[in-house]
Image (cartoon, rainbow, N blue to C red; front, side):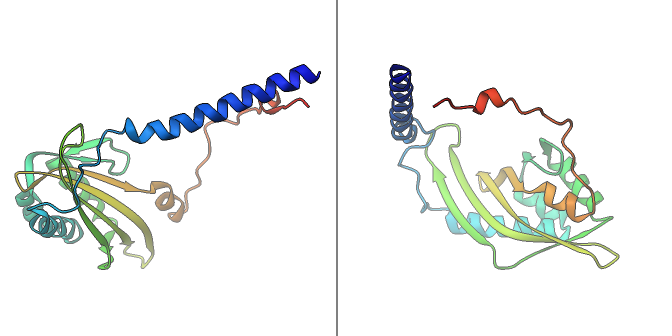
Amino acid sequence: MKSRRRMEKKILLLWIVALGVLSVYQPVAAQVDDRTSLDFPQEEELIRTAKETVEAYETGNWETLRKNSAVDAMFYNLGSYDSLNLEKTIAYWSKGREIATPVLDKDGVWLGISVPEGPREGNWILHWGTNTLRYPNGETISFPYHVALKFRENKVSQAHFYYDNNRIIRALGYEIQPPFDEEQDDSLIKIEN
């Protein structure tokens, strides 16, 4: 019994050491190296364009959204959609205005970042804020959001939206149920002494 305990302790120690090595190695293997810059020549201009683009969403100013977006711009993570092109995004947001009006807090945070190489290469403007949806019956739903806007030739080429859709669904009075009940397998968590 003592030799089994010793073996379990050695295995546990080996796992801890392996996790420690991986935690040190992870930053080395990251997709973006330390040459990423928070200060780049077009930062102020791109932040102005990003603010104008986000305001265009809020006000439903689709001409400004078109002016600030590349023809082939893609918008990710809106509602239940993985990705939408510019015209489908406008159609989605226009349809949404039939049931609710978005109002964005004016105290959001804006950050410019330039990534010199790799899969995220380019100039990005990151924005965090709070969106309040106002419904005709007077009901409101507020939720924090984050959007990452990638620019190409001073136009938005990608927009990645992050927000908790479940918060909106629950606020509308819907209940979220898991698809099935999982049985807990006690043998996976049982630890012998």
